[in-house]
Image (cartoon, rainbow, N blue to C red; front, side, top):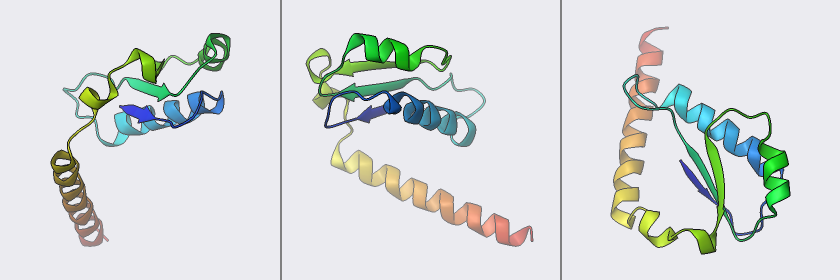
Length: 103
């Protein structure tokens, strides 16, 4: 899982990323999948802030700056995003249908 921020790293980003990674693991990850890895990409970062923010968190996560990664190569195409959104909408409709049927 990759989160892209348009500003410098802030300590609260660590908690949010931890939340997102755990949510993906609980809600989307299949049993045969590896644990989710979180990557936060920010415009800038202070190494001490990052180290202190992630101390005590065991979730596999990391922080990088725009200069350290080739963001364009990592991002999905517009068509891939559209396909994924359609799939998620279908899954949500099916989940709602199943929830109503179980009431």
